Length: 415
Ligand SMILES: Cc1cc2nc3c(=O)[nH]c(=O)nc-3n(C[C@H](O)[C@H](O)[C@H](O)COP(=O)(O)OP(=O)(O)OC[C@H]3O[C@@H](n4cnc5c(N)ncnc54)[C@H](O)[C@@H]3O)c2cc1C
Image (cartoon, rainbow, N blue to C red):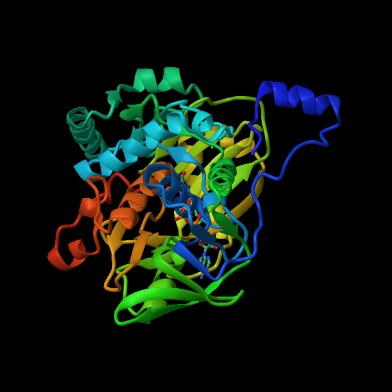
């Protein structure tokens, strides 16, 4: 694979861009792989990448029923932060955030990581107490966050109205090295690196069955024929319940549509990410100038990857209290993705009752930020057959044993 560089851009400019190679190959499936990953979203691709990079396992296929990055990875609002409350969560999200810092250089692919800072507004006394507690926990976990007063909130984000009609801004939890990245580029960068290691990224290949013999996996049935494997990683977000059913076990997961929307593009008005959990909405400005707005999850389980008018109306109505300037903007488009929600709002990275089958799911409304850390931990689990320190607490067994990792506050707003 040719490396991207300033020199390559200049060379291609001179020869009318005729020399670029395809970023990844599109091979036919082989009859057998050492490991198969189902789902070419960010988590599946990152798992494959770290299997190859950290553990030398390269006879790997990543099977995707649609196009890579076409699930939640290409539908999210790209917020990256690690200011979670519980120790296991802070550890994996901070690992991911720190990998994001140098991911463009590592993959030789510009993922446009922008550590512009994320603030979570405190708009009730209850939230103030909650975020002070999180700031203290983060200090002990080595995650750099601080609770800032309203004056500082206004300095960082002048378009905020501090004395809204229902909920004044009483302060915010601020993480200066949090931010955003280009979501498609994260998937494309990992796919290119996997392909470069000789792995097969196979699109339009739906897994329709999981074959087992004597309690262990031997392969999968797909829309392009059967494929054998020694190890299988299920990394399909909202479709996890369906894949688990194929393998013969059940998951404590619900699938719902989560929605987001963007406004027409405007000149730069905001260079931080703001989350307003009490009124329920969050916002950042994209490089194109659109205001990227996160809405809520549907109140009922479903598999529709669509947006709906009432979410647009509810979300914008709520956000206008804190950002009055929004009332003069036109909303351009809206969409939805199927998110995989666990009861404690924490992920599952785990062995399963079927030997050789591993699962990574339950990232719900907030897994984009976790992609590099999750892939790292899942690859370790698949390579060794046992979880490493990052994944140990996120086993399926916690639901049986009552060892929940309650992140319903940190993950409360939908992202
Ligand atoms: C509107 C919205 C906003 C969000 N905002 C944020 C945010 O700001 N920050 C954040 O951190 N997170 C956010 N999230 C959550 C985040 O997008 C997800 O947690 C993350 O992208 C999940 O990645 P994934 O790789 O697990 O899943 P996906 O990207 O969904 O990938 C799973 C893939 O599996 C494939 N698949 C399913 N079934 C099969 C099958 N049978 N065979 C083959 N392939 C199959 C799917 O086609 C899909 O491509 C948001 C989500 C949504 C929907």
